[in-house]
Length: 390
Image 1: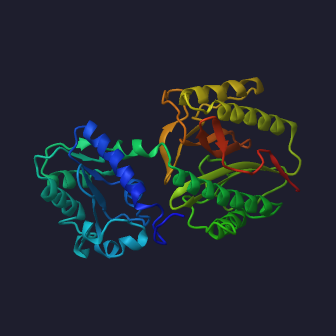
Image 2: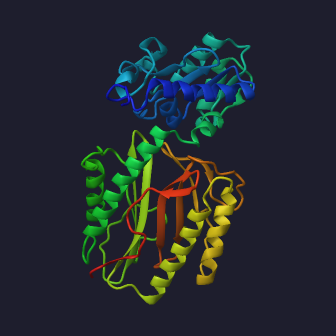
Image 3: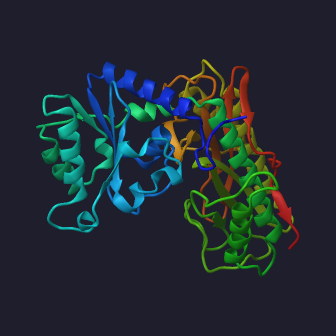
């Protein structure tokens, strides 16, 4: 039985093990300190699950001590209630007069705090990818260094291989996503509004399952298809379903910010021979990708296997066929022909095979775990072209 408080998702020992991995990477990169800015990375290192509301927050990681967490005071006072495992003396809150200020901002507060703790002679890394054009000079100037080291990939690289507890949360998220998808499919019918299908999905995601609590999804559901909804990343529009239309339904859910996602395609009425053939081609590509997704293969091997399986059906997929998937959605390499990243056990991916043609949109996607023996699909929803009565 895991020993933790109600809101702490992992044992403190797991967070400390993650910090050890990050510190080893910092040392290899020649860093004495690292300023972590990504919300996903804050959650990964500290267990803090709240969102910032666009106000600056950062974690200072050093080689030999517990981290410091710097954030808005109203959030700092209750950070442990939002999952953070640090003791209160390591959580630093900045005052409200820095929020929305055009004079001295919270970036300067964070920079000065870091400089006071580690000194200007320290080799400081910063997640530069998390800084905007206006925040970058403010933070760097306050740090007192001419040019910080780029630490954008330090924590990200440590997240790619998942622990057993992380895999459990992703499996739970996938089960909730399945329930949301099936609720949406069941709602579809002639004359039904897209928004009503989205509402059915969101209700199921919030409710979860009988044994797994639901929560806020990482993104609204996608409903893509029909005469007008053709943009690949469209949520839903002011439209109704009509006989003969086809649409794919994409659903994402999360458990402690670990994501699960599933996509299936629905045809209203009997599918045409052309659309059935498209389904068979997409399914062949999907199965080839999953069969190739095993330790020792590379991401490019997976992409090429998918493309080769689709060609006999006259289909091609120029986009990547998936990506590393986990905390706050994307967390690593793409399954693309230009990626030679080697696949290892306990990596997790979102495998996506799709057609993006006006009036012919089709997608099949699942969350997948890599085991020692191959890939394990997290969704239990049948991988079929769903045909609803018109």
